Image (cartoon, rainbow, N blue to C red):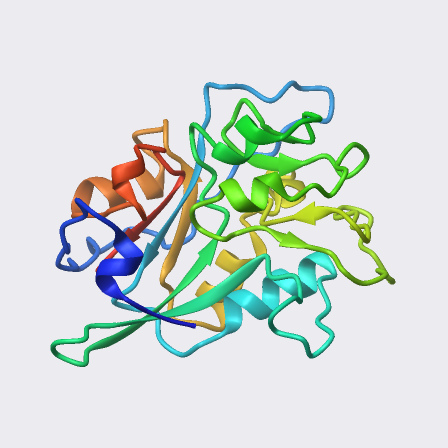
Length: 241
């Protein structure tokens, strides 16, 4: 998939020069495990920062996501489920090319939730946007409402599902930020893979904690959200676009 930078970022988004990360900061922000009996709280808001200056043709994040959540393709790229995908941006004037991972942006005001007729699309108090597969009727209104094309419709029968990531033919799905891992005090699989096998371009953590690594990284340099003109206050931010 190839988009021009202007098409991708949208009106009003100024190109932001990448800045080096501050030395000594950890690239992986360790989340704190939540007891199963402990309610999700709005005192936290989970977020993700992607440094595009470090992201290249590596596909470690996509592979790790799909392995973690049991997402299997059927050699039909146009319709296969994609919880995360790599997008190529090309500056038409200079020819400069960038690649970046795009997944559910976990908006503070998610359009997918607004249009869902059954309440299947919902946002947790900590900002993670999910789909309740038990009440999703597959109408795909949420897919039309998502400005990031981050949701997929499951066309095929699903087999060998992961207990933590139930899937079903005829339902819609998207990135969960690996909520099962987050609740266990771990980072999402894409972040773990990026920092282990990739280019250390991803930082995960609590956006409301000023002492978290992601907050320190965000405070150390410029970043932007995709389509800032929509004022969705996404939980996923990018640096270097």
